[in-house]
Length: 506
Image (tube, rainbow, N blue to C red):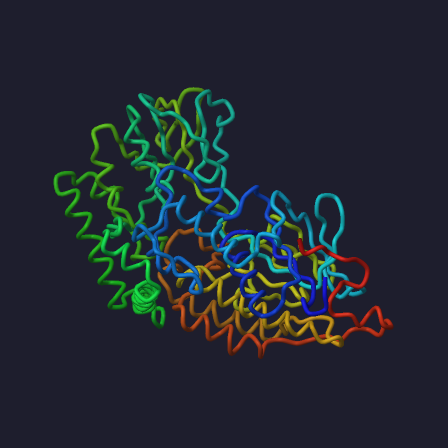
């Protein structure tokens, strides 16, 4: 560790967020960082989610780093190509030496004495001046707790913990109709004898414009200019539909227009099946729950070996599933596409702040932060993809969050500054503002995973990419306050290493 490398920094998580943070820190001249990744490989979500059909919903050129446009082979990249892209980014920016794979951070406890966090890692303590949480948003799987599930004698799979299984000739149940279910169910139907799809509540669906890039397009994308042009076009399209939150405001022109298109799509596909048309039509405005993009989903429901059960699962028996009406369905393979616990932020490690409280104790089940990044009394701690930052375009959001964290951490280079944190009043005002905005959206009108038990929307950002970037660039620095070091002699004025211990940067 050298003085030029700046304060020691721990990045927890090695997916899109962790890689973005590492690149932005390095560009800011802050090279004294370690990336801790609990899995054995780089990629985070895209390392873990390997179920058949896994791919992005956002166009590939936008679902990638602005500093590394890529010659994608498809309009919507699949898991394997995306995970390879992340590996390539790590190598291109010479980050691999900073990674510690297969290493989970158990806890991070603030120490005034050390002006940093004591991290518990593999049974030993290491001290870092700053911590960037890059553990993700959809990273804690939601496993069902149906009565009798442990007695099921067939094969049980979760889309977030996939194990390759031969379903040829078998009876398969897919529980859920969200994005992962929509991607995996058609693949199951290709081989299974019969596929049952259990739907608790329908979601809005539009056909996904996904395809392989043509040979001419792939040749053009070998040059940087066309790649950047395609990214700008996708960025403008995303910004247009979300500007001023109009996409998710009930009754707005664009919301009504998109819902009309979704209804027309239902009418087109199920022209001869009014029963299915009725079953898949939501009873809430478009966007109330996460919309699904797929050209395969509705046609899959029409396949002769597929049956939609428009009811929730009540229980499981040794050989099947019992639905909410008490009907038992024989099943050999149970696929739980039940998603994640999105309202539970930073639960994979216990983070304790200056007052001796953990984040969860402070939040009391309702996570919030300034711009989704900082919380009072948690100095030098920065969250990426934190509360109320889902929406817009997430990779762009991650880059803006990482840039802000790098700017704030750079202030710790000054020997006199012990910590940087958000002022309580700024934190309160910001969250009051964001909740007022969210109360006017379609998200407030539907049953969705965006809310806590109290109904508070804690996951979503209601506006577009530009405004979020402006908040982090202009408002976030104004929200900061710093604390000076206590006088502890020469050892207490070093800005390049923690006071009591040295944390290796890899």
